[in-house]
Length: 265
Ligand code: T3D
Image 1 (tube, rainbow, N blue to C red):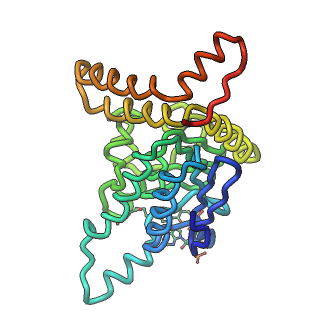
Image 2: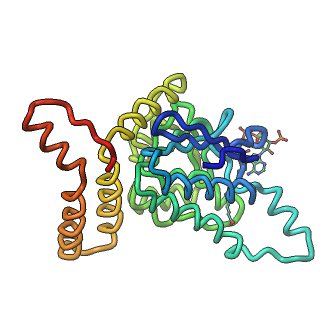
Image 3: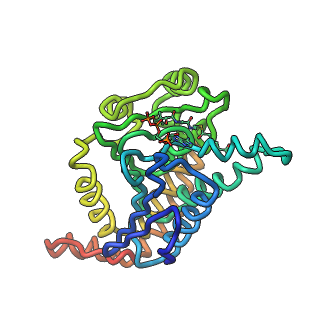
């Protein structure tokens, strides 16, 4: 995997790769280069078999302050009009790359996570927030609708009523409150965020990776299906899971009363 990016740090520790959005002076506000680099890193992680879990986080005191508004300012000041839906295609590619990643993706959130940065975190499979987290759908503050898949993920995570409240009022939700609402899976003291994330990522990276990919596919696809179609899909994906070496290893380990050693195959 390419590691020399300008706005994204890439660190691999055994089977876990951590991708850090790295513009701390502007709270990791996302400019075009950062979106492109992050997308390349995520897409590479998806096909790299040495990587079995991905962590996404931000450098410094924030997870991310959303779209870099100086880019919007420059675009609006120029004679070339910005068509936002064209600009958004880059974000859409990133969101889909995270969602289709055939291995777990964890977002580790400290400080501010707002706008498109928050919605990127919502596309991840598991969110761990620090107790100093400030999560907000800031779009309405600048007269925009939520993008980056937020209109899809937010009501599915916290229900339509709370999603509308977050999108309309654009008020901050703290880390502890986000845990109570189901917006994040867990909230921990800031000093424990890195270690908690590392322990979880290492645990997931030792799991049955192929099956994890199938679990993601089954749950995310089932959100759009009726029960009958979901039951049909589960049969297909269970055939695929049953054919993995890790399934055989899991059964053998149980029968011989030993811990399973999954290879991700
Ligand atoms: O293609 C598309 O359509 C995608 C569209 C996406 C839309 C969005 O993402 S909507 C959300 C856009 N983001 C915002 O509206 C947030 C703007 N920032 C803020 O409201 C505040 O900075 C925060 C509440 C996030 C944090 O406040 P605070 O007091 O902790 O920090 P600060 O002092 O305001 O910010 C520190 C620096 O980061 C500051 O720079 P300076 O003055 O030290 O030189 C600030 O200007 C800069 N910064 C923060 N957010 C952004 C930013 N620079 C550019 N773009 C930002 N979004």
